[in-house]
Image (cartoon, rainbow, N blue to C red; front, side, top):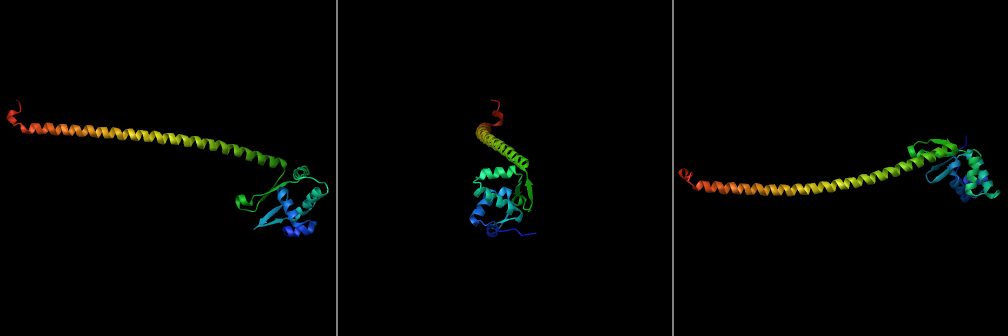
Length: 177
């Protein structure tokens, strides 16, 4: 089995300038079996023939990117997704167009769910603000009530003291007078 090839090696094999090979790989990476090693992009030897076809479609048939992607899909080439960055394992899955459509639909559904969650979060934040404001208002009213009660208690104590002081001055036999 051959090793993965870097862009310069591919450039020599398909007789194409390295920047052009790099552009082809970037534009049609979904159909090519690639991997990154540091900053280098490596291509599996199985994808060399497909890269030659892509080159022919650009140069001979004067096709543009979208036309080439459509032709690749129509020809039955499967998109390759490297999920290494997702779960940190080197796992590759080949997807046909219906699987790709399914993944797109799932992403669209997930986006809708995320938007709904964001809206719910905004509503919850508003509700929390209202609850905080209500709590602060009730706390302020409670403090005012406590201060008023303390003032009443003080005045009652002063009244009791003055009554007690006035009663102390009377002698016991003058109490009924």
